[in-house]
Image (cartoon, rainbow, N blue to C red):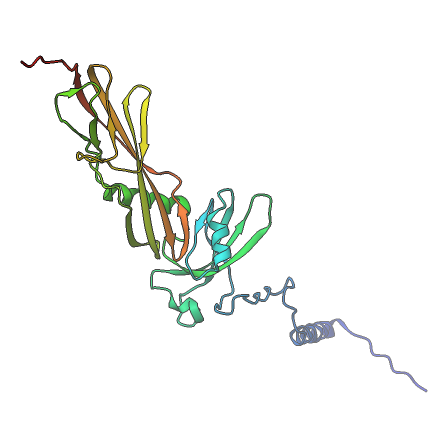
Length: 287
């Protein structure tokens, strides 16, 4: 049998190379590329929240300290977040509302200037915990410190200043009781308002501390009265001039979207004083 051998000449070489290159290209195009390989980006993770469609997670807000979260997030999670001053937290933007179909479910109920955020909290020495998702305003989650600062500022606006008075207003005598009033009401102060997108109810109970003279104090929930039985009286046993000081403490409590009561950690304090002269009683002989 005769075997024919074909020898490639230099003029055939470019044609053969071109055929090999075309064949390799066709083979590469026919081979599926695996997601996550170096040739293609990873496929987006499936969102765990069924109300949200989103591929990317962006830490929109991060911080430390306790948080006051809205009512859509579960009560146990809200209570834990409100009482964790050493916690670190992050609010993740899980629904980008740049298009009409970017969000669905509850995420679509957010106001135009709001955003759908998922909250994660890490306690000192612990692991990160998912707390839930809700609509938040442009400022993001409300810290407990910022909420209580706002409550205290509003409380200071609503509480009238101390205005102490006494009876008799002049001519007090030793051993005779002097009645005092702080000039405020001892009724509980309450109001409702909206704070950080949450329905907030506030209540505050006052108490007063009187210092009539060095070492003589009275702490009472009564505002006092210039009439008999007002509850704030003092009889001086020595004549002289006295500076009577009264200080008030308004301790606030609040509920945010039903969570509470939470105690405002820094109460509102006021101080005022009033001066009086106490004279020596004299016996008068009457014939």
